[in-house]
Image (cartoon, rainbow, N blue to C red):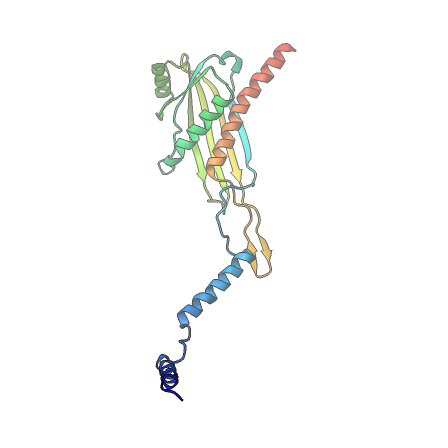
Length: 232
């Protein structure tokens, strides 16, 4: 054996003995791998949702009680001031999207000649009428949130509002309507050892838009019904 061969063999053996056996994976790494496998299997089985649903297909049940109703054709050319929704103190955050929903739907259906939103909440009919006269409106809408329960999708959502439209010239209550909207969550489905959650209930802002649309539709429909009766 030559000197170069001996040196090469000796260097290889010494390096191997110094390095020792390959280190085994730590317990922590093994646990992380196990958790990853279990989590992936759980997501595929449906027991963990990879993302939160932003929308829902659940229906909204809406009802309407009419306490006072005027002839809409007599006020189609009037200007309407829409006041902010009055709410209980703990529900003040709902006022903005409720007001916006009703104002948008009334504008969309062209119920009145002009609609002006005022950032005020009237404490009484006389105060509401004062605001309307000051802004040059012949009508004023004074809406109120009576009850709200937002189940965040997992529980029923309920919304109750009351909308009153007054004549700013005479103080007469032209329309007085109470509306209620309810949305229930869908039933869950049991699958083997896991369960799939049902469709969540609609959130309050969806109920608000639904009630606003129903209110505007009611005003337009009453105008059409009055026109048909006149032709007969």
